[in-house]
Length: 103
Image (cartoon, rainbow, N blue to C red):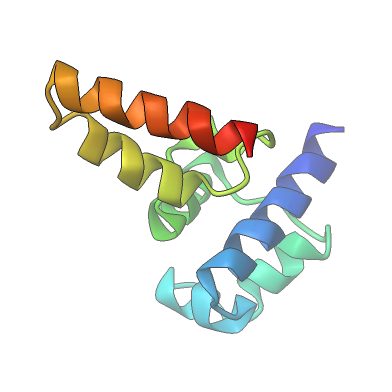
C-alpha cells in the first residue's frame, strides 16, 4: 500500500517539476535508469536515496507522503514567504483565501 503511494507520488512530483526520469537520475548521480526502475516498481531507494530524491524535488520528506497536498513545492515556498509577514498582512491574506474558496 505505502509502496504504491511512493511510486505514484514520485512520478507525480517529478512530472510537476517537468524533468524526465533519466535527467533526474543523472542529477542524483545515479545510473540513467535509476528513477525509471523505481517508478516501474522494480526497486525502492535506500533511505539516503529517498532524502536525495526529496531534496531534488524540493519537498520535505514529511510532505512527500501527504497525498492531500498536490503541489508541495509551491506550498513550501508559500509557507516560507508567509513566515515573513506580520499579523495584519496574514489577516488580509486569510480573508482573500476565504473569499477565493467561496467563488
